[in-house]
Amino acid sequence: MTDTPATHAPERRAPALILSAMLLFSLQDLVTKLVVDSVSVWQLQFIRSILVVTLAAGIAMLWGGTAQMRPSSFRWPLVRSGFLVLSYLFFYVSFPFLTLSAAAAAFFTGPLFMTIFAWAFLGERLGPRRVLAILAGFAGVLVIVRPGTDSFQPASLLPVASAVCYAMGVIVTRARCKDEPVLGLSMLHNLLYTLVAVVGLVVIEHLPLAENARAEWPFLATGWHPVEAWAMLLLAATAVTHICGVMAATRAYQLADTSRIAPLEYSYLIYAPLWDLFVWSRPPEPTTLAGMMLIALAGAFVSWREGRPARPTMPSDGEDPWIGDR
Image (cartoon, rainbow, N blue to C red; front, side):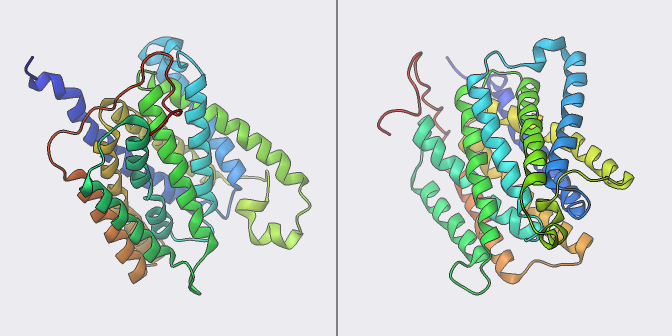
């Protein structure tokens, strides 16, 4: 049977969806970095997650009722949510220590990990060009992080840990949550986020931290404290960008192969240096720009390949893709 343009119409929407998601996520991260001195990371996650759940519930009612608000099963959506919660937490914890450009560049090992994981777990093709792209991308990260030098900051590894968790979340989305309602996935993710934030708020208040440590790192070492009106408005804005971005990104990965969509996430790297420059008057360091260029070129190289990518080989009923020889 010959493929028709209509056959691939959903796949053709995926690139536009992921590009839109990256713009929204860059705005979300810009706003988050603006409030790191005014709220704690636990407040940030709690307030925004509550707002996101409220928005998602409203959208679900408009789109088709409560059926849109919950996944058909909970096992794999919960696994996916766990990886994404860890990803966001690692990423935002790095904000007091790194510029947005440096954090974003280290985080963007994510699409490289996705390509590796898609090959290992989903059976997607990994040819020589993608291997070279992966090596080039990791070389770019080394240029930015500079391990073994006086410029090395352990906090630079936090966005890399975030990238690994994010990549695993994407792979679970593709392998096990492809047909789940997008709003249901977002709802579960943010409910878990809320639970983690509540636990964090309780635990951080009872940790025996010195007062000077709490004063020096309020984003990390404090619990609940009053939030100014301007900060609350910004947090509300991030709730909107978050739910719209997550919905767009999730739908993109449901529509097309991971290896086809992941490289387009590098479009985020266009925005981060601009925010650093125009908002904080901090142009990226030459090594950061060099590393970002390597990472961006790696993404372009991954997307430039011969022929159509093979669809992932999905396991038959009862077969677990995480077990067995790969």
